[in-house]
Length: 161
Image 1 (cartoon, one colour):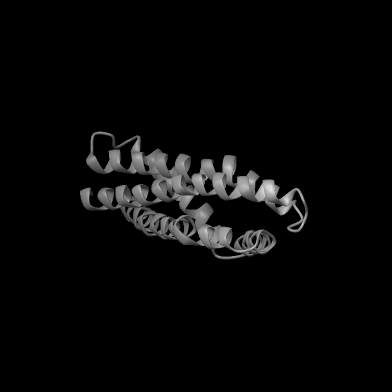
Image 2 (image 1 turned 45 degrees about the vertical axis):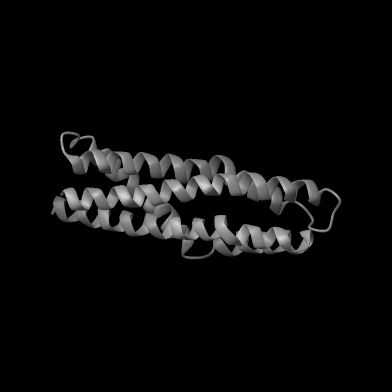
């Protein structure tokens, strides 16, 4: 039974982290660039809307679910450090939780909150939007890489088992 649960968690994390990487990749490679090219008030309004909608979407269960599963797998990996699968699980879990989850909470969420607090057509909006486009996208690049590499490492763990 325990092996079934671990395998299920590994598959969930491999697929979930890959899905998260794809979403973050889309934001990093074209969505933020597109929002930065339209008039500032429209870009801010669009991102404010995205921030509201995403919190009520299937993104949130996947965001928290993959984080919890990755953390659990990293903990279980501590008992399997003499196996390739254990090392891959530990590395993937730590990378995902720190690189994706912690960076989101520490960097992206405060930037989202600051953007949500601004009136898109106000004089203050220009500085907030300029900083947001640069800093939020930088941290999103990190989340993209962390999620993609974690997904690959979870696949390594599956294969090694």
